[in-house]
Each structure stands twice: as C-alpha cells, then as structure tokens.
Image (cartoon, rainbow, N blue to C red; front, top):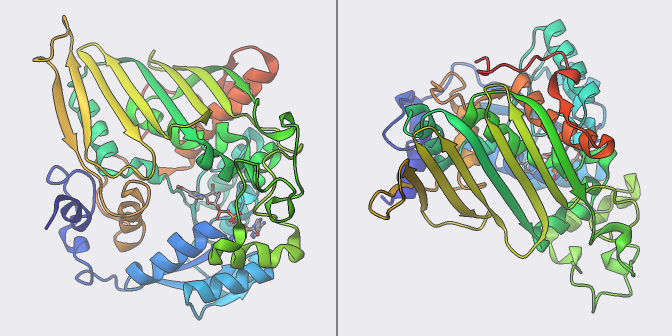
Amino acid sequence: MNRRKFIRNTSVLTAGTVLVNPAANIAGFYAPQNKMKVAVVGTGVRCVFMFGRDLLRDYSNYVDLVGLCDINPGRLRFAKSFIGTNCNTYTDLDEMIRREKPDNLIVTTEDSAHHEVIIRGMELGCDIITEKPLTIDEVKAQAIVDAEKRTGKKVIVTFNYRYPPYRAKIKEILMSGLVGDILSADFHWNLDHSHLTRYFRRWHGETNRGGTLWVHKSTHHFDMINWWLDSDPEEVFAYGALERYGSKNPFRGKNCRNCAHTNTCPYYWDINQSAVDKGLYADNEHYDGYVRDNCVFRPQIDIYEKHAAVVKYANGAMLNYSLNGDSDFDGYWLAFNGTKGRLELRMGGYSYKDDVDIIFLPNGRFTNEKKQVIKAYHAEGGHWGGDPLMMDKLFKDPNMPDPLGQEAGTRDGVMSIIIGVAARKSIKERQPIKIDSLTSYTPQAKRPS
Ligand SMILES: NC(=O)c1ccc[n+]([C@@H]2O[C@H](COP(=O)([O-])OP(=O)(O)OC[C@H]3O[C@@H](n4cnc5c(N)ncnc54)[C@H](O)[C@@H]3O)[C@@H](O)[C@H]2O)c1
C-alpha cells in the first residue's frame, strides 16, 4: 500500500499520530443504527460532485439523501440525473424540509444566499452543514449567530482546507511547542490567471454576491491562520486593487460563447466543451439568467485582484497576508516566526501532488546542518486530500475524536469571514478596523474551543 492510500484508509490526519475511532475507518465495517437524513440546497457544481455523486458513492451506508432544492428547475433536473439519485426535488426550501424532514441541511447555494437558507433550515428543525464562506457580511453573520442561539440547532462550516494531512501536520507541530510562541506569520497566496478567471466569470466577481475574494476565497486562508495560531483576529488594515479585469480592459464581449474576440482574448473559455458545465449552467440560463461564461471584462466586476492586509491577533501575533490574482504562479508561501525558530512551507496549487517539505529553522545563526525537514504527505481526493477526510468526519462517524479541532462551527465561520469584511472596510475607509466593532463576538487571545 502506498503512503497516500495508507493515509486515506486510516482516515484522519497525519498517519499514526492521531487516535480515531478504529471501527469507523474501515469502509462497511461500522454502520450507524439510523442513517443520517440529509438534503442539499443549491445544486450547482459543488453539490453535484462532493455532496451528490461522492456522497452516494462513498457514504450511502451512513447517509440517506432525501431531497435536493434549487431555485433553478433545470439545474435541479440535471443535478438529480448526474448524481443518480431517486430523491425528490424542490424549488421551495420550506416544502422540502417539511416533507422530507432531513436531520441535516447541506448548504451549497451561492454565497449571498447562505444566511437565508441556514437560518430558515434551523428554524424548521435542521442542523446545518454549510459550505464556506459562512456568509458575506457582518449583518448576515450576526443573524446566523442569533438564529443558532434561538433555535438550539448546530452549524458546521465545511473548512476542508483544515483537513489535508500536511496542514494537520503543521497544526501538530505548532501545538507541540517546537516553534515556541508565535510572534508573527507570513501567508502569501497566488492564483494564476486560469484559476482567477474562474471567479471573474460568474457571481464571484460581484461584491454583493460573493463578498469579494477577501471573503469568498480568503475565508479559507484566514480560517487556517486563526486555527493554527489558536487566537482571534483583533484589528485589520488592508489595501486592494483591480487593475486587469472588469472595466479596465479596452475590449469585452457579451459572454465567451458569442464574443468577437475569441481568437485574441487570452481568457476565452468554451463552456460547451464541458458536458457538466453545459448541462448545469448554459442549458438552464433561460430560467434565471445565471451565465457561467461571462466576460471577465464586464463592467459589473467590482472586486479586487490584488489584496494585502496586516492582521493583529488578540495574542499579540501579527499576520502579513496577500492574495495575488494577476500571476502566472498558482500556490503559496507560509511561515511562522516563533520564540524558538521559524517554520516555513512553499506549496503549489491544487494540481500539486508531490510530498511536502515543512522546514524548521531553529533560532541562532542559520546553517544548513541546523535546518530540519519535516516530511508530510498528500491524501487521495480533492483539495490535497482534504475533502474525503472531512467527509469521513461529517458522515461516517460524526463523533470521531477531533484532537486537532478540525471541525469548525459558527464562531470559526464568523472569525474567518470577518477579517475579509474588515479588510473591505479598511480599504474604503483607509483606516484599521477593529473586529469587535462588527459582531457580538469579542476577540479572545486563545480561541474558545
Ligand atoms: N470548500 C471548497 O473548497 C468549495 C469549493 C467549491 C465551492 N464551494 C462553495 O460551495 C458553494 C456553491 O458553489 P458552486 O460553485 O457550486 O456554486 P454554483 O453557482 O454552481 O451553485 C449554486 C447554486 O445555488 C443556487 N441558488 C442560489 N440561491 C439559492 C437559493 N436562495 N435557494 C436555493 N438555491 C439557490 C443556484 O441556482 C445554483 O444552482 C459556494 O458557497 C462556494 O463557496 C466551496
């Protein structure tokens, strides 16, 4: 068995170092008395693959998919057939929940609708498993916090970025005290043009729908830093710029399919080459006007492609962060400077499959002999192997021990988006923004567990 398969089969985290429920790790060995009843709202691409096809293929011993809901009936029909489920479909969320009575509502709608369906789902008796970002602004975040308290229901935010084994390894190293107290962190993430334009082509390009990449994308990054540092953000100062996309370009078309510039535009993309994208989106545009291959130079784009922020944490640590969107490089560079030394990592993007070297440089004059290389590995599956490991915890055995605290709830969801919300405000107001001015949460030096 190769190393990656071994990690996948032993389920959670870095092999051998973490106790997990042994019965839950062997497919088919452990089965719950009553299967969890789940329904999904928002049947786009995230639903049909991860919470549809993969859920039925790998978790049907544990979970019954009892309903699918979307405001677009055509996308709903395609999703049902692509997933291969017999469950009922609905364009009305209330009706689906009342009829099917799911235990858990899985939320994979557009980001701007998350708060509505999360709150309604809880009011109608469901626990919630929601995709990131929890929501896109502070008012909607507070409404979710209040609704969770009012209904007594539970929200899990699917921060799959916490689950790749090498990220769990970083958490273990930081928890072990090897690096000492963390004084500062450097985190610089690049999206290459093909990755970035995937966001600019659709709703993510509009602030009131995706909250800007400060929220839609960086929620993952800020969540990891909050989790690794084990502290809450206290204050944020940021800059942002849009220089290449949106109205900046001299030419534009209606969308890629009927554009006069297909031969010259570096970002031309033919949606009809992908049966799933065509079936989900292009074939169903007439229902709701959702255009999947919009022009990346349309004037409605009002988000940023370059992002830089400094975040002060309640434990005194400082984060230097950037998200660079006009780049030929996809991947990131991460470092923690501690009282005992420095931990460093350089990584490629989603397609990067090689093993990972985490470098530790102990304090003192640098020599190559003192440098320690800590090996870490990828697991099989999406997002560096994080998706299936998180799915195991969500569906195979929700009570599986969680010694690194990888499962995330409402507070984690809020504390990650709120850095992006504060960054947006900081850019507009040209001043630092205090996190405690935005929601009822007060930043803590050590995150409450
Ligand atoms: N964690 C990850 O790595 C990851 C990866 C991809 C997507 N996501 C998240 O998953 C979610 C879905 O992403 P996607 O790419 O599938 O988006 P999508 O646009 O393809 O699908 C969203 C669907 O939601 C539907 N919808 C919108 N408002 C609705 C409402 N009020 N009620 C019911 N349906 C509604 C739309 O019609 C659409 O079919 C997003 O929040 C995104 O951030 C997370």
